[in-house]
Length: 546
Image (cartoon, rainbow, N blue to C red):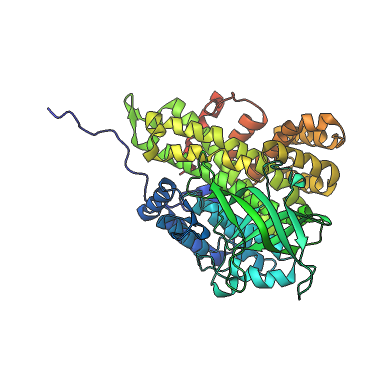
């Protein structure tokens, strides 16, 4: 008798098309991306589901970067060594135009929506390398405001050539950007930064170049070619462009002290860095550092939404794959009523995140700056907050197999909390929403206009939207109570925004189930608690989910 007969185990999760089998994303691409760009996204989606790509993602995560502070002769080199799969992933992402290319596109194109869809697709392969890809994209938004610096850096940051190594920018086919904002004493409170910037006297760039001295607590992707760094200049907190290699080929002082030992995101090197006489060019006026980077922060927050949506979608796809191939109690898991409730509920969460993320990218393309200002902050808080519980439930769909590393959900679970922390944790983003609502009223009016597009199509949504907007408009920025209720205000705005988008763009069963469960509140506190009157909608929702 054989004692090890393998049966009722699901086949490997491979061969999925990451665009075509994601119906909500495919529809958003058809809606908001130029037809001429869709074929490129299809190719990326096909590649992302291959065994080759998934294996590179696994290897990059399983083989974390290694810090080399000195060479064999004792010279300080401050280099990070990455696994070859990291470079393969980076090369594919850069080659697909997922870095700063949209900032060089002609106005009126769908460059940001195209790039956002690609970022969402490719992040499913492996999330860690998305950090430098995202920072490079975001750096373009800040650099374009300085013609001199943009002429040096933006073409290389927008290049589709991945060219790794510390060399002068003039000698490279392409470049990657990092950031050095936070410090150990302040975190998100960057105005508490103590890194000093002293102007360099004389020379052709006198007044624009400085020497920086200080410490950065979180500096991801330290092998990037250039960094945007906040430091205290004589006129106050200021933004600087800091290259790793100087024009003469020498290395800018940039001492990598250690790499962070993180919960997840293992493939990405997050470091602590010492700057001591480090050369930098001023970007924007002295004392206007926060104002200079505000567009950049918006861009990275949009990528946090996209990255979290990607994590949600991959978790859902893996749960569906398991449920369709696994038998339990006489039938496929996907046919078990309670599992169907869970899967449909997860699918609602993923679709709402997808449509919101791509609508915001479309708003960037459209120049809808007021909607972007508030919508991105709202989405960053809500979508990133929803990812961890959503992935946890998807993991549970696999039972004990979900808790095993080789099945993919464990990696997603470790990744799930990250985007809610990066670029401002939940409280920081919630307070930013309150700031926008109370001090930038045009942003709330832009969101109100968006919500009213579907006015009259759902009485329950109209009532909910009116209540949410009334609460938002009644806030007093100077009152402690505004901060106290910030999270509930943001949650209401986010649900109203997602619901309006689903009513406008998604099939009836999806929109109706979202309204009943999220807006009317006819749902419990866990996934899989949709009310019984939605049982008829579950089938179409699951079929649509892929």
